[in-house]
Length: 442
Image 1 (tube, rainbow, N blue to C red):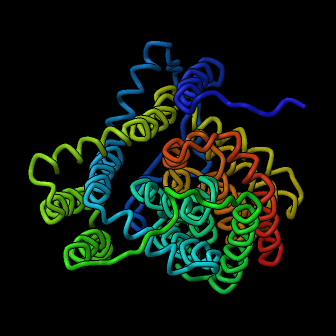
Image 2: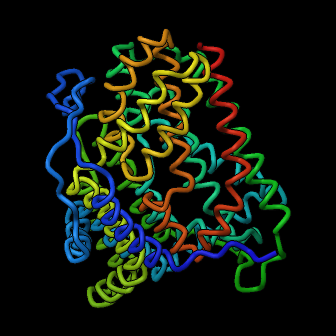
């Protein structure tokens, strides 16, 4: 049997751009009316206002013009990847990165599975609290080195980082970009239904960790000499560098909670830290600059994928067909039995998440349409929110329009088709878990 094989991620994403452009010639153009929502501070659609508009099909050249526009739209994330990637290379050149990894490998020793549990829980918490995704990209070199030290493969590094973060994001009762905004649009209190969501979250994280450990141990090989830990001695200089590595993350958390920080502030924090690390690590000004550029070159491909992925949704927006896609998927639900309609909301949200790669963008697009429909069918609004979380959240595992996922897989040199084979059974189980929760809430 011939194995599934996908082209290079860049080719795959460019093909998606062209497919999106072709759809603007096939799907009728249409729009919902929109208004500014005070509760969320966002522009949301108005239910039952869908109407046809003049077609604006996107031609081949305009589709390729959307690619540089995607770079502009994703500029903050691209800059973050470049600047933080440069900073990590400075840490590596100073010798501290290898020392950190060696210390962790030596610390966990034969209980290496504990590293998977701890790191998976940490990334799941990041996903649950702030929809962590792009922030993981700069950590990939450290995670890969750590896994190599334990004899694990790149898939394990991806699973315990971006995989765990996606699980945390999807099942979180308070993720401001998924459950948080969806609950507001459904006019439900932020923590309503939290008990059920917390149980689902804990079960989902436990299942994902078990799946990750199973793969890690089944594929483990004894690390070669280059990846075995050496005797680590943290002198004063290395401890200072370690503090400088941690400082941007601490500053970012404080900044997000208190000062409305975003990716630009995190990028700036890592730029400053990288400069000081180079000087403390005795690389000198020229050595620090050279290391920074080496690091930026190493993550250029990942940064490019993020820009190209963003351009796909721009093409569909230009063609004015996203609202038509939503209307076409939602309309059949009105004639379905109540329980069946509730379950069908999951694949509807999943299909919509392919062109609408932002979970918050999908919430403001779909929830104002789904909520009146669920009221009409007698479906609990909690169920409608859970269906959104399941469809949009779990699709993050496999859609090529998830730029951060594609960038991480490319950086790890983990083939996309191999990742799909790994996550497919887990996503099926997690989807059934979500549906079970929906039936309880129904």
